[in-house]
Length: 210
Image 1 (cartoon, rainbow, N blue to C red):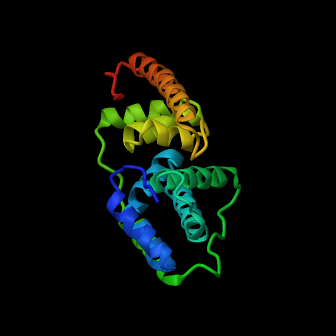
Image 2: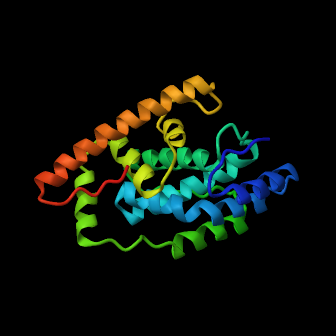
């Protein structure tokens, strides 16, 4: 089993071993401990509502619990988790009311782990300029916002972004991956240029990194 290189590799090896040993609860709790804070921050920035982000995070935890035993490592674990997070955010946005998202089949110890992450994760402190830039970013379309959040805030690779934003399937050929990452770079440049125009028009300094 080959794991894609990313900062969570050491944890991913342990998670893979736990899953192979059918120790699902321990694997799922390690996933939440390792990746939960970043996923929750993404949801809070993307949804701009702690209430909606909490709903989405609960959905995400449920999806992780149900899907982790079947995860085939065709992409990095981090990529798969952000695919799930994006889906959870979209489902919350489509909902007109708060949802009952806790399944009776979800392990209570795992739910407790999710709750610890939810209550202890904080948004990074932002300067007034950064807050204003983030507000301007909300004028972009959904995919452009997600692209900038995941690239600038979360530091995901071009291939990870391509998979998360449906440019290419996990496990695609090397040529398909190269083409998808090239398209993703182009989409990023378009989004960044649009944001820079908004930032310039608002009298702020450009604040988007490559």
